[in-house]
Structures are given as structure tokens and as C-alpha cells.
Length: 327
Image (cartoon, rainbow, N blue to C red; front, side, top):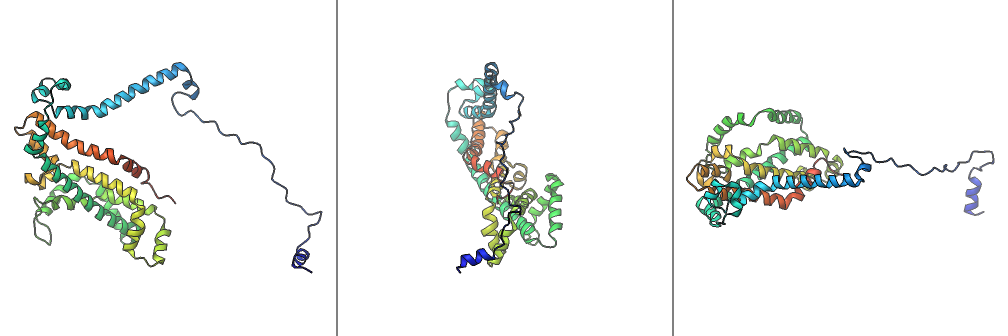
């Protein structure tokens, strides 16, 4: 007897009286739910010629208003930066027909020392961003991944600082900068006076911790099984998965450092170290012509606008994917 015959003989016979599995009943075509109207105007009204024409008119008007309100001030500042001071004062909206004076930009760059101030601003922004990343990543990794016993107490203390106004900490922070504890040195008129306080950002720590919490723990457990330590888990697992939120924090830190005014004015009294946010008010109170002041303003605002225009896709992508990690 073959093996197939033995298997057939050993298998239980199915009698005619036993219930046999019935094939699934055929169902009719599924009915898809009709899309509901979510706007003020229904889909049927949008097909009418009169409604369609009015919609195009309203959309065109809104588009023109948005373009004028968004690009209008920037274009006016650009034209004012190369216009004579008399034309700016006498007829601000008529400068479009005034002759161009390209020398205003050169005077603002060299004479008003805007070029040096922009260099100081870039140095301060890069240092503040690096300080923010180091402190925020370390604190968020400690609270989210390492999870020490005293982690909840530290997390609560960090969140509590969000309820304190920033002005309240200016006096003790300024006294600390004048006389650093243990080191007994003064950081006045040094870039460190701006870099170090920038790292103490409770908001960035909270945002990074929430993102680290959304990373599946299985990734870290697998890395531990492979013999990875905490630093390797941070550099090989956590940071590569956190690129979107890190990009957002970098851009926010750069923008925040670029427009910071009060703290750099307090700790950087030397004009050779001051950023453009502090140099522009000093330029306005001086004897510089209005055209040179407008040229300095235009040179100051054009750089952040260009940077955002270049990296807007990465910024928007980072904001959209900052809520969690896809499995």
C-alpha cells in the first residue's frame, strides 16, 4: 500500500449526513457613501455658471490681497533701500518712480557696519542652535529613553519653567553671566553670554521628549540585544529617526536667535560684537540718512526670507511629520 493510500485510509471519512462548509454567500456591489458637502457652497451649486464665475472673481481678489499684503512691504523696503531720503519722506508711495541710488546698499554695508553685524548675527545663531541641540537632545534622551528614577521630578521641574515669564529670569541670569559660579569669570561682552542661556529651552526639551516617546521601544531593545550602549542607541537609532523634529528645532532656533534683541543688548555692550537686532536701533538714533537706514533694514530682512524660501519644503515636511514615527 502506498503512502497516499495509508493517509487516505487514516483520515476520517466525511459522511453524507455531516454538515459541509457552505461557500460564502455572494454579496451585491458595495455602495459607496456619497461625499458630503463640507463648504458653504454645495457641489451642485458649484457647477452653475453664475456661481462658478463669482467664485473665480472672489478667489482672484483674495489672491491679489494676499500677494499685496505679503510681498508689498518687502518690495517697498527693497525700493526704499535704493531711493533718495527726500523722496522717502515727501512721498513714501511715490518712490517707485524715483531714481535708483545703489550706493545706499554699499553705505549701509560698510559705513553703517551692517556687514559686520550680520556676521555677528550668524555666529550667534549658529552657536545658540548648537547649544540648544546639545542640551535639548541630552535632556530628552535622558527622560524618554534612559528613564532614571528621578526622571519624573526633573520633567515636572522643566515643565514648570514654562509658566514663568522670560523677563523674570533676566536679573539672576545677568548676575550669573557677570560672575560665573565655580569659574569666577565674567562672560560680559563674549558670545558665550548668548550661547549658553540659549541652550536652556524647556519648550524644545518637551517637544523632543514627546517625539522620542513616539519612537517604538522595540528598536532600542533590538539595539541593546546587539550590544549597543546608550550613546550608540542615541546616534544610531534615535537621532536618525528624529531628523524631522530636529530640523524644525534648528530653524526655530535660528529664527529666534536672529530676532533676539533684549538679551544681546544687555550682555553685548561692545558695538563690534552686537548683532543686527541691536545695531539697527542704534543706527536709527544716529545721524545716518533715512535711505541708508532703509538699506540696512532691507539687508537685514532679506537673508531670513531667502533662507526660508530655500528650505521651506524641509521646514513644512518637518512640521508635518513631527507628530510621530511611522511604523
